[in-house]
Length: 360
Ligand code: ATP
Image 1 (cartoon, rainbow, N blue to C red):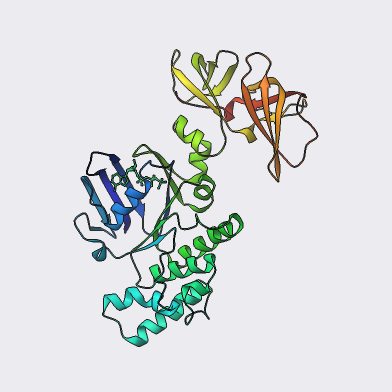
Image 2 (image 1 turned 30 degrees about the vertical axis):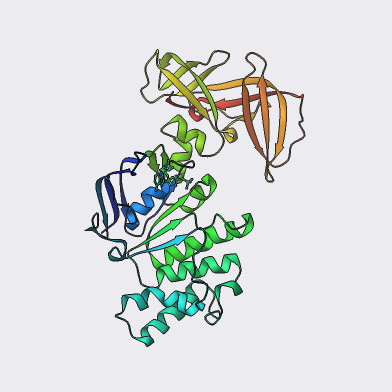
């Protein structure tokens, strides 16, 4: 069974803003897909189009194998959670969670009470039914918002930045908790965030959006390690990006002249003369002490530079290195602690297999 399908979905707002430009995606039943991208790229519009709050200008939306393109929100059987929780302030928690089933009108009081109790157990807040929302913390309110969305047994769960107003620690706890609940219920979920780390940790697949389009859709490891475009590489995590042109190709590797530095990079069919960008993740660079391993073909790149800046990231250290030749900045990440500091000369090395070519 299909969870959610968007086919050629385009949304032009009155006034002319083209917010979503022909997006296609098939989300499997039970899958957790995140829409991630910068502010204004069309994430919320896409989600609202699935929920039925916006009607697509073109294209179709189906949920649980049913074409709902022309159906109003209340006929789509989706549950939605927003950043601001949107709990009803004057209702008890029990009444909040029961709300969707009450509106449905085809459940007995006993059924509703049992379901509310089940949902409060699910979000691990069994004893709060008689309280009002203002008697709960932000994290607890968000759990209740989730319980309320899930109580009527929707076909899909739609989450619009639900963790954005929580502090970092609580947010990280809720990421794990939300995923646990989603898996336990087995519900098809679309999650919107502009936080790349959140997208990478939580999702089965990520759709990276830019300017109303999906630049790449793939598993977290795939979009991070094999970005399809320069935008994806740059948006997800830190990337060293070097623009240049291919001057030679052999044995699956390309030589890319980036002006001041020349990089040997893994090549999947890009021809000589093409303008490209080379993507190197900071953690792929090793500080060269002569023992670094190279790949099977024995091709590695070595760069010399001066440490301009050292950033402590908790479990790792990041150096910003300026090359002697061209004053290009290189980000290098090393786990644990490290003794080097600004002004030190450093030689760093990266396997050609870890240098990825994308279209410029
Ligand atoms: P953010 O992360 O800031 O919430 P987003 O990726 O969710 O952004 P959308 O809210 O979908 O982006 O907006 C996409 C584009 O559509 C933006 O240019 C926005 O200004 C525009 N837009 C959104 N809602 C409307 C509306 N009701 N009328 C006209 N234009 C709108």
